[in-house]
Image 1 (cartoon, rainbow, N blue to C red):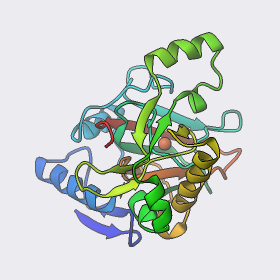
Image 2 (image 1 turned 180 degrees about the vertical axis):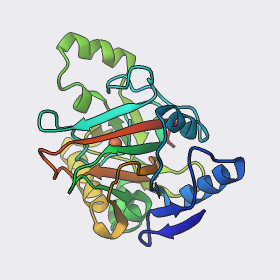
Image 3 (image 1 turned 90 degrees about the vertical axis):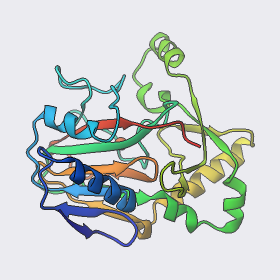
Image 4 (image 1 turned 135 degrees about the vertical axis):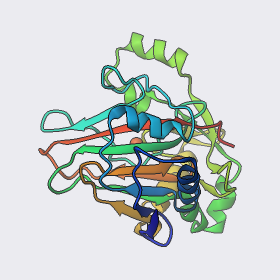
Length: 268
Ligand SMILES: [Fe+2]
């Protein structure tokens, strides 16, 4: 396999590999490149859904998403579809399922129907975004915790009763504002708009100001890469150290992508 970095801080395209037929050595090599580049892009990978799942299992246990739709026989696959009727909103910067007590280690997304133009996904290196913060802001956020709650995004269309039931099952999670990557030791920004309600233990104004400042840092193109999709492109990213955003710029075209999500550990 060959490695072609996309920017100086995040992303690499990997060529000369067939993800349907990997051996142990290749999985190990992918893991190493993944930790180094944080986002890996593989082109022309015509996997079956089962092969997509099997590839994901090489890196850990896969989760079943309690709110997102999945193809009938494949509960581990999240189906993400936008068209002229349904607009899937992944257009806010986030890391996947941070509202869980043990959020995702990584996601593996496969393009099935890709718009002629638009629908790119951008990725930000949250450690580099953190490095570039003013020292004064770093000091202020370093030891803080934020509260993550699914209901901000997935509870919008639920009845009051349903939301309360789900909140019992998936209570708000408390995670460090700056988390440490369990394998590389890098420290990165771990707050986001779709799931974080507030930073714990400080005034509401201060919480909002800091969350905005952190979001702003992630939005700098200098810490990002941007991936153009094709049918059968597979992008694999590390949710512990990157955030992502889908460009909402292809209405009314159809975009259909499918994800498997690797379970991670409790952030520290
Ligand atoms: Fe996502």
